[in-house]
Amino acid sequence: FLAGSRLGSEEDWIQFRHQVTTLVLATDMSLHFESLSKFQTQMVTKLDKGCARIEVLGNDKGMEMAIQMALKTADIGHCAMRLGSHIYWVAKLEVEFFRQGDLERKAGHPISPLMDREKTGTTHPSNQVGFFDVIVLPLYSAFVQAFPEASPLLDQLDINYSYWKHCTAKPDYAPPILDDLHWRIMEAFESSGQ
Image (cartoon, one colour):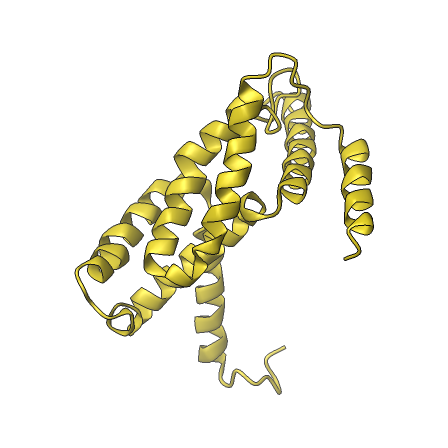
């Protein structure tokens, strides 16, 4: 496997594997608040105090932290997509979560939050508003503080957040049916000429 690779030595591969593992583990939601707090303390605060970005990112730890945050924003990137695409991915996530909940139930395990199809799932507006309030908006706000070039993402986040807030006020709200929603999104995309 290593023979002929461009990474060089076995030590390079070990280091590469370590970095990839660290980055993937950084997307674990159980570590979210710790990671975000560390990012805000060690990166955003320094930038707010006038440190140059190159100073903050100029070492391995700073660069690793920045890449971790970029990966975390990408992991929930559907929140910053156009509304139709965002809703589509929320519905897909609910299908995935409910399948996992079914497996947990079948195995006799406690069912994880949002994974019990007998309760409200990810497509319920109040769950999305809570997700935006607690996870999405603080993460993206901190990321944009460190990387202002990403600020256009906040505009779409605001649109999507407003949609879910509007839906919480609708007593007759019904979660989207994935197949129907997918068809409507594709129809809208095709009719837009893109």
